[in-house]
Image 1 (cartoon, rainbow, N blue to C red):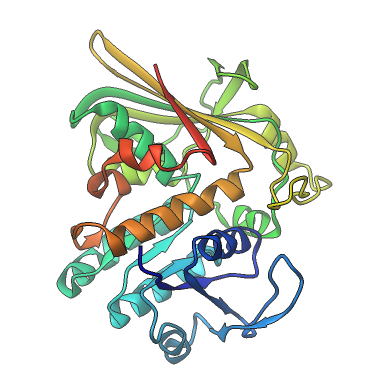
Image 2 (spheres, rainbow, N blue to C red):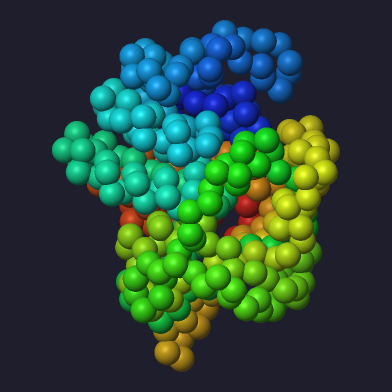
Length: 333
């Protein structure tokens, strides 16, 4: 594979550093885009990057000069996604981000799809653990079906030590959450009852709560389902709501935390029912192979449809998921 020059916005952030490291391990030229133009990698040796300001169109255009694609890891994405995606369209390069925000993903689909199609550019929002992974898993088990009765997505985490960016986004992400009911996006009830979910090890059977994120928006673009619901177990929510919970602490040479995850998707249509699970360590680290893998497929694979897209619309999802090994292990029931 030829090396590409790929800009990473928010390179100094927790997820951004994982993405930078992943690109460089694959011998690509990762260009850090930061607020002050400086980048401090995991080694601690400061580098010079490119300074950007998402409120300044000219700085964004300068930041993308000569780049083949841009990966946006700079949250909150309420502020950065649209101006960065618009800059990518002007530069004629793909844009991908890692937003979990439903509102941000919806706004990109609603506001930039026509512009991106006209420019022949592919935009992939939410190409991350929250968002893209569930869409890939759902599409993989559909095996060509486009219409089903239900899709249930459950995330099980052993813990959740949120980054500063996660906390900032959570404080601002107060818009009503949506899931799919009767085939359309609908606001979730104020008090939706919890249920039990039997996860694969190491989570096991636990109580889960409805928590729809950007995966709902992605799945809605290309799957016709009467209901799509997302859940998460209670332990990570307790960690997230506790202001004393510290940020992630690295316990491995590559910077991963001790957090383990299992994401499971169950799809049903009449008597037909199937399930798939994805497991690994550290949801922030797991985002790097997802967004980098998608970017490289856009740059090095067959032509993909232009416009704002969900990964399930444009990739061979089973092959994509297989390529994530060993960072993310996928098992089909």
